[in-house]
Length: 75
Image (cartoon, rainbow, N blue to C red; front, side, top):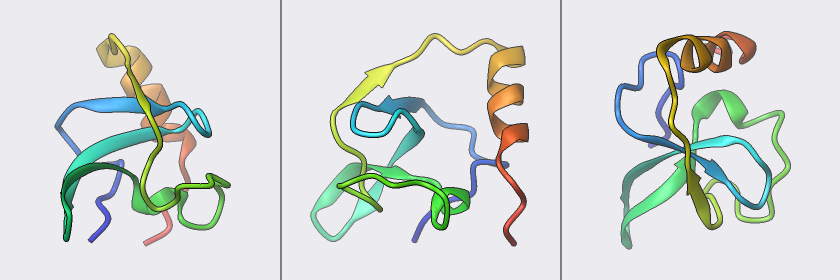
């Protein structure tokens, strides 16, 4: 099940395939990096809903708030 970017508190990385945020979450194959539920209709990634290789980002409170705010509330 995909998580919402709005309330997620864990580590967030950038997907190298599409440049969008991703989180480490459980799948049938173990923990894998995945895209957030708000990205369902607006992100083209060849690996979606999973993320490709990821890059760690040193987020600060302001940058992470800005990223969360840019995604529409789809639920």
